[in-house]
Amino acid sequence: MTETPTLTSLAKAGGCAAKYPAARLETLLAGFVPADSVDLLVGLDPADDAAVYRLDDERAIVFTVDFFPPVVDDPRAFGAIAATNALNDVLAMGGVPLLALSIAAFPEELPAEMLGEILAGADEVVRAAGAILAGGHTIRDDEPKYGLAVVGTVHPDGIWPKSGACPGDALFLTKALGTGLVLQAQREGRAPAGALDAAVTAMRTLNRDAADALRPFSPNAVTDVTGFGLLGHAYEMASRSGVGLELEAAALPALPGALALAEDGTRTGGDRRNREYAGPHVTSTVAAEYEALAFDPQTAGGLLVSLPADKGAVLAATFADRGLELYRIGVVRDGSGVTLR
Image (cartoon, rainbow, N blue to C red; front, top):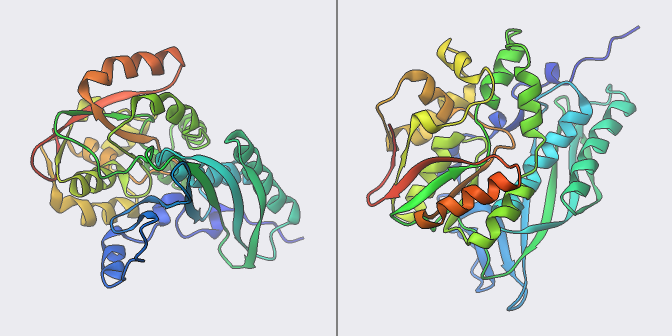
């Protein structure tokens, strides 16, 4: 009797750590001529978390696609995490998800029941986001991959770009960091007790409630923290906003066990690629473990938010009242690049 392989044993890299390197992606797109349309409100010039196209004065559609290889062996959890990661792109733009289509690549030898569990996990999260999983496309592949194409809506004046951070803004993060570190340790068989469960819970948590709490505050800039790590996404926010970001290492939230793993030398391939991309634009004066936490590629991470500092106290109270995570991690200043201190 042939034993069914585990999902992660079929993957070379899992989750957002499998992203194409950001530096190479910039080179790849350098010669690409963006579409010229007054109704394309967000496209590739500059790129953001999703594309936005205006339908009329009151409505715009938000469109994204995201998929990756397995991060965990539990098929339902994998489907839920992949769906969460894709839906979060629409939420990071200030949008509301409406419709999703599956994008799947599966080895033929995997049992149909396992694939059904992946789809069931995704459908559960799509429904929780208030959207509908309406179909999709599946191909054969030796390495399993799953994700979603998602369409949502947003008011044309309510888009949250990553390019609007202003000097004097406060910076907030809505989820703890360290999913890459924990998943790498799990693959090596040395994750601390409870660390994987905490990471899976975080990765399955939609940013919907955080986005709903944030919406009345009209943030200046928002992005979700995924494969390029906190510092990669912070650099993108800084460069596209024409400002500098200062992050406080002691304020960075870490998942259980993540900081200790970083201190012990745990690193992912995504860590190296993120340093190659953002490292030249980051000034750090902190211990290696805090740098590793900040460069760590995240899967279905939280929102990085820039908004006027005078709104910070009320924002924190609002999140606390709703039982939501929120961490004040830094400030926006004149200048360029990112400082980790």
